Image (cartoon, rainbow, N blue to C red):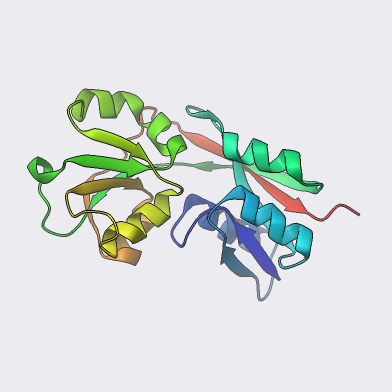
Length: 187
């Protein structure tokens, strides 16, 4: 059973997909990283995946706008919704010191969830949006992003991509939950 998720390997959507597979006791469940909600719903519509999982709202960052836009383009049924506790890490290339950082990038939702931290701790650094938290981590590790860049991403990305955690749990709220949708084809 192929399950498409909004995000690259290591994303919170991948974690949500793994949780769904475990809770539903799906033998042979396969996560397909599709980076954005449009790609997830397109793949569901084309029959390339059986379920699609993507975030629609965060308790601190609000509505996931890209998911709303994608949902407006496709017909699908919602199988269920559930919440995942979100903790953001500030990741850097190994050996990068705080003083070396000239920019921070991540998905706009992660930036929104960390906005007070960023304002307080990194007011002189350029903050840029990226298409996905985990893709930002992958691209930092792969030298697509400059070595002076830090990314906001899940802890799992540090292990997956060989990055260092400069700071842990940088989200503004201790209780930071994202609601995920499990989408299936409309019958």
